Image 1: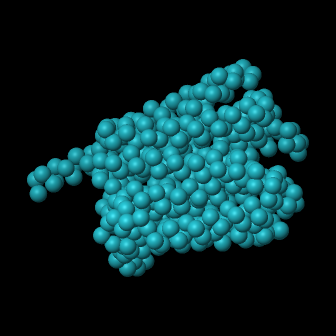
Image 2: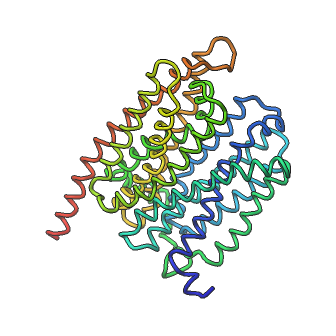
Image 3: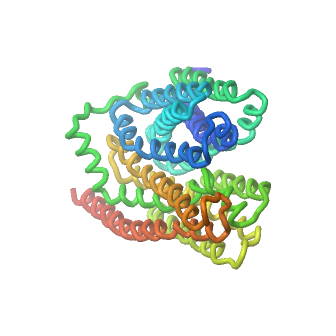
Length: 425
């Protein structure tokens, strides 16, 4: 391959995307290994759920530190560090035989996972023309979901045929191959391999974060991400399958099909949304308001349905809810156009916290409500218990919608103010 080809935007993006797909694979790989993990570590269902909660907590908590690191050291160095952490974490997880060590290993994987997406978004902003950035960003999020698909069928086969240790060793070994590709191909910008920002003191870090958060566009992006993503994330990571089987009395095969449809919806709706917001950037918040209102409306129909909802209605539910995943990426585009390049990654980190903190809250609250509404110590959750539990989503949607409406007015006013200042200046 020629030097020109190695330095093309699509080649750089392709290597970065491969690392992100691997991160999504590692994030999702435990989903098909739950029963095996329960036997291997001798843990309860609640302890198994701790893996998911820890993953979300580590991922969300790392967003601002990672954003600051990217602004200071560039995408190449930070993404390489994340790849090393994921590889080491999966390797330790492969050999772990105790629950505490397994938790530490998954925390390492979560930290590495948190260091990929922000880096990739920064690369997209650095390598592609402005008109293409919204579309490429959405395609990035869409293709990243192939990691979740790969974590389903191939990982299930590997666990059954290779066993726990070898399956996770093979998964970790892919990181070594990608590290070599990253070192050879990936450059922070077309002008240089490694981008270095100004050294950051504690005072400068506070000032940078404060400046990002003060901008109404960053806050608008945060609340967009907050209210669009959490329902799909909560369903796909933990509670979707139990809800469909126990709450809606569907078969295991039907529940699996519904969750697969949701992932497929995420993959196909992303490019459409990317095209839409690139053509109508002034109406990005309107798109989010319409999508979230649609999600709320469909959930209302399902939860208010007397008895189990028909399968066709559940199909509509996963299709509409699935659009919320790529819709959350619109928040990053708002943050990109609201902040200067030197603090773009830290602003992205702030925005990326929104949906994951909301998801973390929902994972915990749904479990608590299910236990509250289920008699005794039984885990045989009833449809009525699931109606109560899933209704806990409505307060978060209300909060998010109010905040998006509130900050979109402020963000639009700021855009007009800046435009007027540039014309008069």
